[in-house]
Amino acid sequence: MKTVFVTVGTTSFDELIAAVSSPAAEQVLRSRGCRQLVLQIGRGALQPAPQYGPAFVRDVFRFKESLAEDLRRADLVISHAGAGSCLETLEEGKPLLVVINEKLMDNHQLELARQLHKDGHVLYCNCRYGAAVAVTLDAVLRSITVITVLRM
Amino acid sequence: MQPWFPPPGSTGAFFLLLLLPPLLLVPFVLLARRRHDRRTPPLRLLVVAGSGGHTTEILRLLSCLSESYSPRCYVLADSDKMSEAKIRSFEQKRAERFSNSQFTLDRIPRSREVRQSWTSSVVTTAYSILYSLPLTYKLKPDLILCNGPGTCVPVCISALLLGLLGMKRAIIVYVESICRVETLSLSGKILYYFSDYFIVQWPALKEKYPKSVYLGRIV
Image 1 (cartoon, chains in turn cyan, yellow):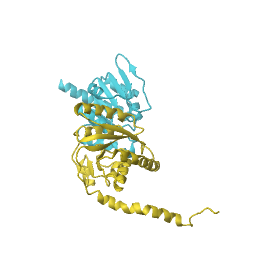
Image 2 (cartoon, chains in turn yellow, green):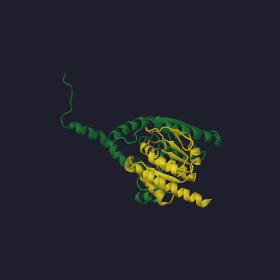
Image 3 (tube, chains in turn green, blue):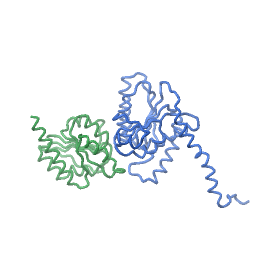
Image 4 (tube, one colour):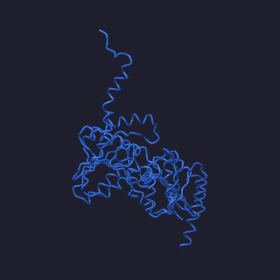
């Protein structure tokens, strides 16, 4: 469980970025063996500072022409519920945790997340309560670790 | 010399008389949409590109198109910074596969920004329609392909008006975004009544909107 990639596509989703760069989330990531957190922050106002330590690296960028390489390198992808982000991630066969942006019109993002979850492709949560993302992240990372161990 | 003012109470009647002829034409427009004239390739295709995922989805659709759909005329919102790069990259790869691959790129004022209020959206959409008319007239598409961004509404309405005036009748194909599982987007709700082909990607929508076409996931 090495790299976690967070993507918001071309949108702005400060609540998600705040949640995954919070001390609680970082604690969860480190304790589950995550060594690198990559944040693609899109048009967001919140820009966490990058970190380059021996045990843990946090990379931050806004946009790239293609996210294919970052998706390929990730062990877990945390994404907003945009169609492009979800489709690209699932096509790479990566575990995907979808976080709903409830501030969008009609909260329509919930529909796609719910359907993909029903079909068994993703887990999803919102970030109404900052702690919820850290807790869900912990559960997801734990299950990924278990699956990885079973495959060895 | 007294300035002429209309007699009191007649201003409303005046506007009603002005609006009446176009309103009476609406049923004829809706009926006329049923008749499809034959088109022969190459077909001039107008593609409405929206922000972010909309552009990604529409380029995925376009990747399946043959050489018959040329030129491809992309219409973007003026505030959209990201889509142009994606489109140029897509067209560059396409030019490697098909010789004589042509495309154009035009921008119109965005009819609605994300989280913009409804009332101001009506005004900005009306402005976008007026702006789109000369552009659609210039491009004269045979087919319009769109997938849900607000930008597509003024473009499609301007194409409908041109068809109404007998200048150019474009076939409108609307593909609802894969994000829309149970409910249609606002653009979808409007264009459901005005498009020639309305495609949805989840079965729940086919049940709610019987005139739509369901082919499964196509992006």
